[in-house]
Length: 370
Ligand SMILES: NC(=O)C1=CN([C@@H]2O[C@H](COP(=O)(O)OP(=O)(O)OC[C@H]3O[C@@H](n4cnc5c(N)ncnc54)[C@H](O)[C@@H]3O)[C@@H](O)[C@H]2O)C=CC1
Ligand SMILES: CC(=O)C(=O)O
Ligand SMILES: [Mg+2]
View 1 (cartoon, rainbow, N blue to C red):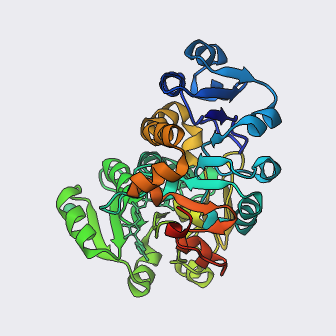
View 2: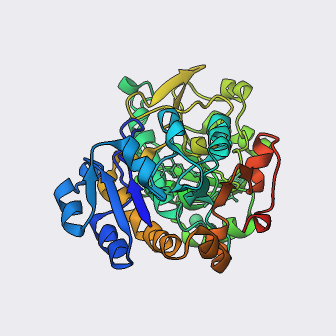
């Protein structure tokens, strides 16, 4: 099949969906690869390396979308890309549909087949195509949060680790999954007092055993969150119910009980955000303030560290891409229950329940389209 890789167009999104090594692998399997000029440059891979691996580099993005049987991307299609998606085309990328009704409707209307990285799911419930980016975003969350806690950046002016004789900062992490654990690890390493909150007691039990002495666990409930709010300096939002809109764990009225200059880093913003006052921001203008509380809500955090993120992402996406290209999407999904979980929309039908529920749209079980 013909596989097209456009350059990412989201603000400061420097990742690319395929490496020159991936091009070589797909070529070996008999496929043709078209890549947009400059697509890999931001991640350190110039066009010449793609050409050497056997890709055709083009500057006409409309032609690339028009000719490709499968589009491989990193971030969800943006509005200018909506008219490029077409009937019968496979699009393999992060979609985060529950955060955007307009994208959901555009994909339905296009009749394309949307296989979402973020909902590919293994039998133990883990999300293999989300994990590496959650590792990046979790680690970055603390780094960014620490920066915006600085007074000139609008924060409280507190050093995460404190110093001898002065107490460290208190960090609350909502959701003890991949993002949460990675955020907590870095915060604990910097010397902060960390509390991880989750609704999964088994997970909290595991974290209690594994994490450093300055990390506590607590059951996530409204009462427990409210009790903590006056004492925290930074909160990382890291909850997820796969494919669904994130629950709002902190409402606007709850901001009043927090200290001015507290920093909220809403990593879950790609699924709509877990604070009521969160609105997606970009790396150009990452923070804003509501009632004296600093909000950092960048929906493509890993895009800022593309040297790490592109390698981490393509390590895991390539084997699935090869499978889809070799077998066609239907057979690849029929053969692989993990990949089947990635199918969100095809032929105008939503086949992933949490997406249909997010917008009260009709749901068709994926078995009916496979
Ligand atoms: N903004 C960005 O650039 C990026 C955002 N993300 C997003 O970060 C979010 C978290 O991802 P992962 O850590 O990989 O998910 P995960 O599935 O590993 O962890 C989510 C955790 O949230 C917990 N949870 C669910 N409801 C909860 C509640 N009410 N209170 C407390 N905990 C609750 C779950 O039990 C689970 O342990 C996702 O929305 C993901 O898409 C991931 C990477 C980059
Ligand atoms: C998962 C996600 O939103 C990202 O890597 O940008
Ligand atoms: Mg401990």
